Length: 368
Image (cartoon, rainbow, N blue to C red; front, side, top):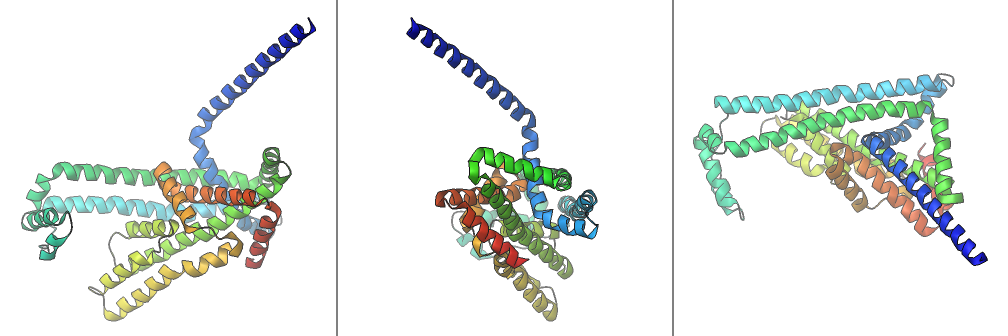
């Protein structure tokens, strides 16, 4: 009889626990579905806030401890720095596409005949030579013959331009959220440490510190250097008079983020400059391109520190996977999140969180 009652009590408790677990799961799933559109902007906002925290602290000290004002000033400054070039880049892309379309329609574009060596290209040589020859003889007729392909390519380009605009809007939204994070930094930090302790026990604090250091190092060492290279390369493109400056600068940014040295793009462009610029200007631009292309080899080790080196393949996979999943935004978010995951996994694997955090803290102290 006692055994029967015990079994009934066990079954009742098991059923009650199952119902509670199911209710919690349904509630959590429902909340996730509702908040899912905001996950990426919030993650990006957290990355931005961590990267800007030292700047915000410096401004706060100058203002006598007024954190809200400091966060507001830093946020507005970042928005001003990003929005103006982004708008110009977007306008430049749209204007370039429009100009190309109008010139195609009016027949103003002259296509030079192809080199006979084009036929020797593997697989596609004959087809490319034939289309190129037709275009050099009758561009409008060739465009008419391939109007479906051109229309499809135009739609793809328009979609990419629209995606670029959405990414800029998301960055603006994330920056505003990051401003709120900076204004309430103490509360956010307390929440993160509490959550980390609940998830990882006593090692939670070390995980939280390691996460903060890793995000800051990756943001400044990889994304910051990439933005600097793209900006300096764009200035060079503009001064020397190269076409499609926004597109070329974006290519430099992408190459730098995915750890492909942008010198591979800058050097051929510098050689091309010799065909239309004066020898002195071309040589100066060549030197500028080499300096910009190789500066990451110097800046990244200095900013990230010896204790924060991450295999190139990890950054590459994070950036490319993020780009495939989230578009342009994913280049930034994917690289940071995957590198953070890698660092945390390696720290867990080594079972030595404190030592890793102390090494990174020492590296940051030496940099400052």
